[in-house]
Amino acid sequence: MSNRANLERQKVTKIKTGETLNQLLLFDDYGENTYIVESIPDDDLECLIECIKQHKEEQYRQGVLDNTYESEKGISIDGTWYDWEEIYPLFKEYWEDE
Image (tube, rainbow, N blue to C red; front, side, top):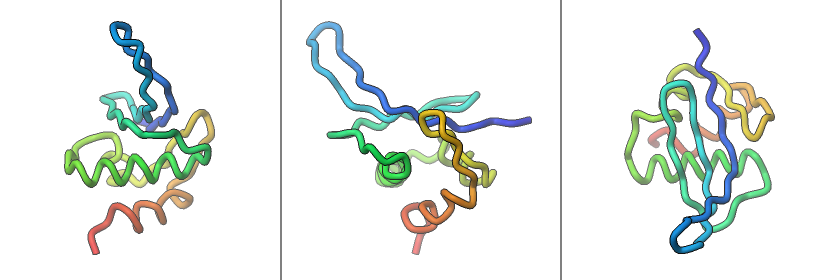
């Protein structure tokens, strides 16, 4: 059974305050993780790098990125598919412990 990870760039406006947040929403069939960023990168893979960095810094493993890493599956970023072979170097550089 497939469980594709998806990453979307989003701007969210808080109704009460009108404040706008830039976020990267990473989700699959079982859950989601939200990463707030100062500015949203234009480059798809830079968005993924930002998610990986925040995910690791916060140390809240057990999320969508964990499943992607453990299953060695690709990811859809705003509708563009990236195979595992394309994204693994990012996990190797930013995720794996030295």
